[in-house]
Length: 195
Image 1 (tube, rainbow, N blue to C red):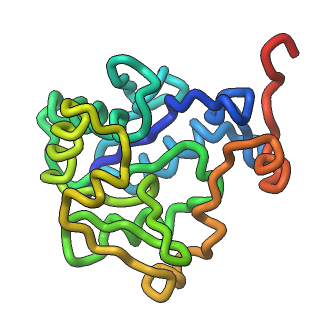
Image 2 (image 1 turned 90 degrees about the vertical axis):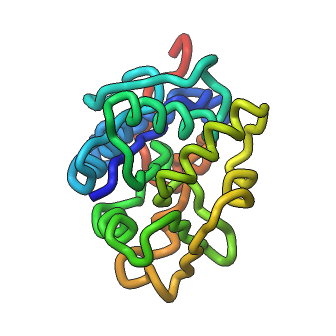
């Protein structure tokens, strides 16, 4: 059974409010992501400011992007003596559901497994092998900030819709970065600053 990392620390500059505070069907995305990872993973951590009930760790300095967040989360797991594959889930993916995460957790072969939608890698809803997480840390220490660089540096099994389509639709990978995207996703946004 893998461990889980919920990434909640994005700046949300385009959305204007914290993504983790947006609600789908009345549930905050931070709580939803934590619940899903708790249902699938042996242990899960939040990487961010502590917006969910999960234990939280933070990249240093905060806001360095998802690769730094993944590396910080992996370090947090290792500090707890936990080394195994890790499911990474970005908080701004409101349509990911438990069947997809279970499928990612149990899919063979073991190792790094990244879904693709129309050929585009979905690196923030994926499973990473323990050695890939070590590579993530090395990349961050070397000044790299892109998840694409991680995918280029490790062995990856990419899986397309013909493999995961029985547990999800491409819409599961829709991220919410703007007010228009939030409206299309029928998310309820908290009041903005000063609102």
